Image (cartoon, rainbow, N blue to C red):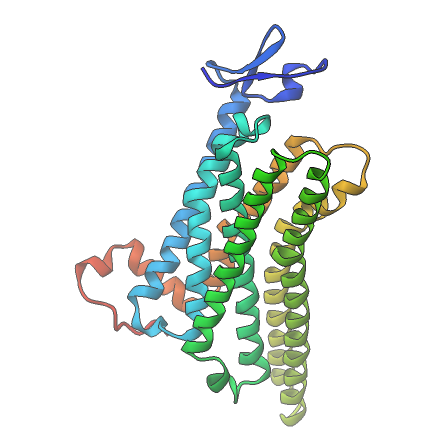
Length: 333
């Protein structure tokens, strides 16, 4: 039997949670879960499994194949590590607490869960931001790329990303502990900590990425127009340029669209909640939180599966070919 939960008011069991059942004036975690509760476990467990497997493929590929040992891929490796930890640590905690006690009790484990959630998710976002900076120099300043983006610079980017993420995660946990000990200042402290976390974890990185990807798109479009003007203006050339523009547009749309689709609803809800008179239902918050976590599952598909050399590496790993011999020096592209 799970933890008992006292619910004030006249809510029905369906208003509380599909995994709880009524026991007169209290609700207890059911020993005979409904179909919805079982499906909830299956769906969330599947998300965790796919996230772990996808990011493991990325990590093994970059570490094993020497041809992938380049500064850009180190950022993708850092991103994959963050997303893997989200799948290993945050997903199971969130899966357990989404259907049990964290809905109603802010205990130690719930605060630790929140701290890991914020730290790893922020690390994932900041790594995405660093990747956009790397892409900016690769596309907009290709001649200076190797001098400005080297192993040392990439190492600093990764350390800063994880350092800032850890500070924000620890700050959120400390604010959560303090909230249970203070009185009138609790709401103000929680509001300030939440607002600062949203600004540094989401809004600043998003603004940076939007500006960078817009600049990349404009430069890529200008380069395509330059290529078109210096050719024979043939139909074949025009078609090739048109394909380049469409490919650049599609890539940027996928990168930004999926990221904003996953993250924007949650942070908009959090930042505007203090301005509303009604408290946002916990079910809505949890649903939006899971939408943000799903970005860690999608990142391998967006940032790794998009490249043909990663697909080649994945095929060799999944087929078990790398176990049969030494293929670390294989040419993937």
